[in-house]
Image (cartoon, rainbow, N blue to C red; front, side, top):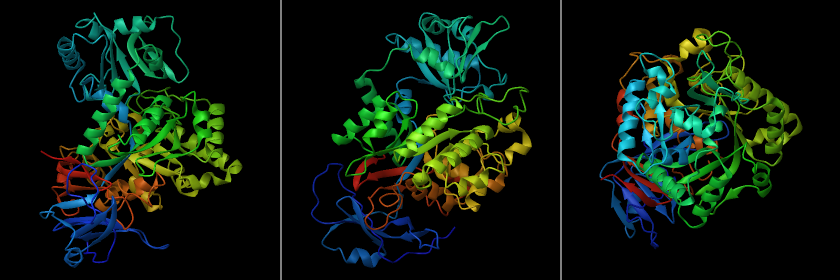
Length: 561
């Protein structure tokens, strides 16, 4: 795709200097760059991508973008030679889990291992290297990648590691694998009842096998030692550093507990946030109504915004927890799990919208999506302002074809994670069959009806790299370029559409499109330098894009070594 040069003045602020917040009396000019930004359309036209070669910013905000003649107007300013590198607006991940990512860096990552045996051996080696740990924790296993495609068991872990409790969450976070020591610690036995919205996988004799699904994980996790405030701060700092290295300047944190709510406010107040956080408060936190009464949280630098609530209504497809209207194609009789009751859903919808908070609801299965749409439709009858809140369905993964138009009529944004499609393609048809796939991962269908998609990754379920998401969106392939023609290729996005989902449309989904999402005059100077021209590079190479620098509010936050 060729982008026509844009020579008008569209504001843009760029600081290629030290990370320190020293006051700069004059604007900063970055010239000799190959830059791209969206430019807002009119009431009847859509925003379009334009190119520029000069960027000017001051006091953290964009002043202008243009060609070489713009740089000439700022001869007495700080001039930076961009060395013909490629510049893009900072990337927003509209659905991630920041502390889960950070704590994941303090535990073992077993993502991508080929079998339960390989996973156990990796955990054993990790445990030997960390004898000081009272618990061995990790994440990332996926039985769908194993030849057996069967859930692992506690006894697999016990054979190699039985002196300490072990807890390994599945890659999607909707199931966990415990050894017998962990089960005993939590008091989970043959007599333990399945909780509502959860399942304890059992053997033929009714004994727990070590696999806990969705709400059943709480039986164990609620008894595990809680991290200290200091440990949590370390996890936050590790996560922010990692995300900035990937070109992510803003994250919508999907489901924060009240302790995290307090942590983020503390960090924002003390200027410790290095990237922007749009926090979605966990709908099931005991202090939800207290948070709603306190109203929206927003600081003057737009580093922290909390004005939304996240509710999860069903599980995930990989663990067969996603709620389906008809049974799973590969498990007759199973229709998934509803994690909250209908009365509870109604109360949350009513109260969240009443307090003018955006409601973002996790729904993966077609039943889950349909019920959420039904609840929004009902809630709008009593809360007329609800339609204006840019409410979202997180994932919108498998949707009945008749329900897709309701997203548009109800003004519900689909918040979709592009790499989910390429991660799930090896099992999705087995789970739901060919007919239901027609409404699954249906990005282009949503876009054609005028829906705006907020792009993301759902890290640490998927890797956070936004260029992996861009590649998956455009090619519908994994990073081995499979399948050859793309999986359900008619639903692929164009590069412009995909990049918009990670920038302006993600900002719109957070009520921040007036200050973020593009490099237009008056918006924050959040931008990245990369080593590829993403609009003209071969599509199969998009995932290889490397971030060279990341800037937030005109301050350098990351530079590749």
